[in-house]
Image (cartoon, rainbow, N blue to C red; front, side):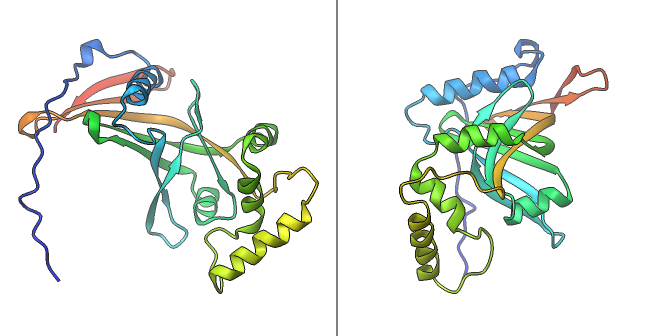
Length: 215
């Protein structure tokens, strides 16, 4: 099977990016772009981000997860610690995140280190989840091979019965990660593929070096 995609074209021309006008801290810059995307009605699930890890089999693995919070320290997401991504992070906590907002012709790539959140913070977020999602965290052996869809449905029913009339507590194998950035790149699409790329690199004195990259 073959499909030629060479004629796919898009002219990027909505905005431009000048390193002279960006904040000194990339988290502040991220906040500004995120809030702009959030206000754009054409941007759906602006907190969806690609998470790349070094897999336990040596291959890179990438998947989409949801950003649940960002602070001056970094970026927070939640998952099953026993999942493929959890096991990969336990082995090598160097990860990458990527946000792409095509309607705004913008992309942000983040390199950083992932560390588990304190249990009280994971508990606090877990309490805000819908009850069905809480039960799902208990029921689903994420990333493991299962015999059938019915197996998963039966597991859900089992835990639904177990927690009937009770509060669904957070399982110890489920919680959050904080990704602390060491490098952040902001990409703004431009005509003729002369895209604007501004990179922030964390220095030893905790300041950020700002550089322009070729497109």
